[in-house]
Length: 155
Image (cartoon, rainbow, N blue to C red; front, side, top):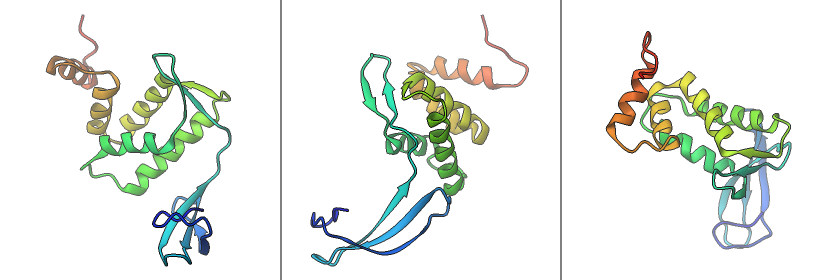
């Protein structure tokens, strides 16, 4: 593992243990060249996933990109960070278990929205505003009115 401080490729593992989520291994590492210490996480990856964008462009699935967008939606919400990590791991496992290596960004977005809706309505609306590309306040109003009990989509 390359040292993030000096670039040395010969780093040493000082400690390994299961992470809090028990689906990854946390490793404390030491760089003998610069003395830097850092942590890495190792996760099981069942298959290499490829995301098919709406434009048709293909790119490798990036868990950190998914995590970043979910954390932005969850920003300043009273949700335990461990719960967010569990949700992200669940989404990734669900994507891997679909049986396909090529997954459309639409499928990923729908799975994320479904997961967010179960955890936090505000985060769900925040994510939806980007995912569904809201352009005006009316878009928010229409979307939120569909969330209210007893009201369906207006025609």
